[in-house]
Amino acid sequence: MMKMRWWRADASEVMAVTAMGVWEAVLAGGGRRFIKRKDSDAGETGRALEELRSSLYNEMHSSESAKRQQMRFCGPSVSLTFNFAVAVGIIMANKMVMGSVGFKFPIALSLIHYAVAFVLMATLKTFSLLPVAPPSKSTPFSSIFALGAVMSLSTGLANLSLKHNSVGFYQMAKIAVTPTIVVAEFMLSQKKVSTQKAITLAVVSFGVAVATVTDLEFNFFGACVALAWIVPSAVNKIFWSSLQQSGNWTALALMWKTTPITIFFLLTLMPLLDPPGLLLFSWNFRNSCAIIISALFGFLLQWSGALALGSRPSSSCSPAT
Image: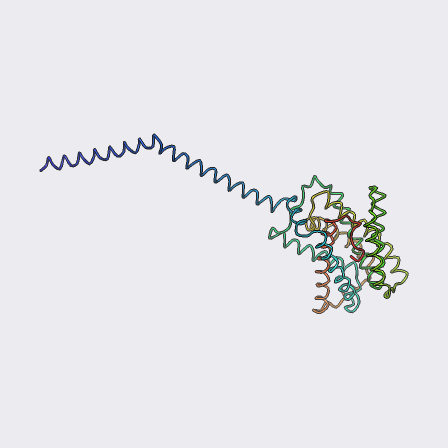
């Protein structure tokens, strides 16, 4: 009996040793090559996933991709239509704020517009929804600074003109911005306007003039402000168009960079152009809501205007906007 048990134990050991030998033979041959191939396939899959992740990240976080997405979804027709609709809305909103609401501080109103715009863009940046700006080397800071300063003059004088003039005269002054842009671009860069474009702009300007000719009320100071506003407005549009088309800037990215500079210059203009009594204004719920609505229109106007200028030459923008 003891011998049979010993024989069974030896047989079990022999079978275990044999199985181990067979497994080592498999690993030494095709099995080891199979495992290596599986490891190689896993490595290639990991590299492919990493490349895909990197591609998606670059698509969402590069200025070139952001610019392509903007041009894809906001072409000339969409951006111009958007800008025209918002421009009509903000003229009515600002006239109401400075008229029936009684907010007689046009520079302060411009400052509130840009402050609200900055808060909205900061919120977008917090959630990584703000497009990435191009590298700082591609655009000198002096260009960003100049654009921010010109924007403060353009926006501030526009609201000051709207305060002292009727909507019709305000729009008539806007018509003069387009030929000023054409002359400035010709003098600075020898850029000429085609006959077809000139005819189109003339027809649009004539249409705006006819639509507003019955509402031409102004005074001497208001006329001077309107004339002073034409040049900064034209330069502002030229700068916006040039920087976006040559530097891969999106509208929101450029707004994010220039808005703090514009706010600084508006703060310096307030004591010079606004009457005293800002803190004595009745900041009740109704008046505050009207001003906030005007500020939201201001953000949309700046954004839509930048989209329009980024998709077309500055001289192609409608005089109505």
